[in-house]
Image (cartoon, rainbow, N blue to C red; front, side, top):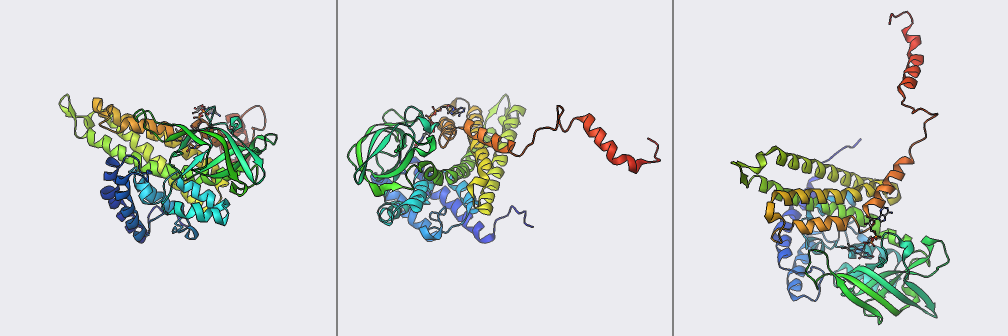
Amino acid sequence: MAWDFSTDPEYAAQLKWAEEFVREECEPLDHVIKESHDLNDPVRQALIPPRQKIVKEQGLWATHLGPKLGGPGYGQVKLGLLNEILGRSECAPIIFGSQAPDSGNSEILAHYGTPELKARYLEPLLDNRIISCFSMTEPQGGADPKVFTTTAVQDGDEWVINGEKWFASFASSASFIIVMAVTDPDAPPYERHSMFVVPGETPGINVLRDVGLGYQPLGGGREGYVRWEDVRVPADHMLGPRGGAFVVAQTRLGGGRIHHAMRTVGLVKRIFDMLCERAVSRFTQGEMLGNKQLVQEMIADSWMEIEAFRLLTMQTAWKIDRYNDYKLVRADISAVKAMMQKVLHDVSARALQIHGSLGTTHEMPFVQYLVESFVLGLADGPTEVHKVTLARQILKGYEPSPDLFPSEHLLRRTAAAEAKVTPELEGIKR
Ligand SMILES: Cc1cc2nc3c(=O)[nH]c(=O)nc-3n(C[C@H](O)[C@H](O)[C@H](O)COP(=O)(O)OP(=O)(O)OC[C@H]3O[C@@H](n4cnc5c(N)ncnc54)[C@H](O)[C@@H]3O)c2cc1C
């Protein structure tokens, strides 16, 4: 019987080291590096690789990977505790070798790549010598893959890709793009697409523009709007079976969603710290904000929501380790995914409110966090879809009531109770 919320002392020491390292060595970099994925930025190259080396020496590099791929294979609970710490800083995941989308893309290549593709792309990717892109979403819709129209047509030993993709993060600078395209238009909807790995420099990959998020300046951004024009890729660059793109995509999505949640726990705790610091720093009407009951309610609500979110995230991580089958934790992952957006949104909004006018400015990060809460509610499936998945999974465990009235109808329950206990009550005055 194990029902334990403690961490073994050896790993606890690693976490303590990571916490200090992230605070002292990663968080400052967030304020001087424009884009932590930009391998062409000399400032980034001067600051990040030396820190990656320290993390490797500490044995905390790429902890999401098993030993075959150069990671320690810690499992999801240990990963969750570490990711919470990394979530505090934009640069920390890349310094610890676990940044999206490369982490998910490396899992796809490890599962489905040929030995040549692994040598060419997986090894340098795991070492962060290159970066990658995953491209599924199209301008006409991302939440419904049935509307995707980008095609790949076979021509001898090659496939020829045509179409438009949108929100392909890092498409401009990636060494390769994992792209989903329709190869079998007459097959059932979820067997129409195949997955390809395409070298970034292939002629015909035309980035129309890099779209920026609301808080980023016009002209900035990293979400590629890409037109694919007669892009030729060798036949052995198909990943997984023909028509199997959705199965391949699942390789990255299950883990990807829970890892985002783990990092969000850390981020939201950091925002909570900002909220509380302000509550004890700012005075109005003769007393500090933290003495006002409505502010205390914000603090209590935030704390309860963060703790509930953290526990659900860690319990899901524990179930993944225990069952080793993402299908068995589908409902849990959907719940965590949906909760993540709400907790980040609500705590950021309260922190912004407590900071008053300062909270609305670009001198504090709350507007960015609010936008990011919506990003978390969109990417890897909208919140609505995850709630539907959760509800459907839950309802699978229920049967309809035996007749017109609910099984808990009080008259029914009383009649059943009477039938059960009447023999025992014989001779007792009621
Ligand atoms: C910062 C960022 C990075 C991204 N990176 C990538 C990437 O690297 N690669 C990639 O392929 N994609 C990426 N995406 C795209 C992301 O996966 C899509 O935004 C997402 O799939 C939703 O698609 P959409 O934006 O077209 O919204 P739509 O499909 O138009 O949906 C819009 C809204 O409709 C509602 N909705 C949709 N479906 C349902 C439903 N079934 N029931 C009820 N309501 C529904 C939801 O509120 C949803 O937000 C990224 C997005 C963002 C914001």
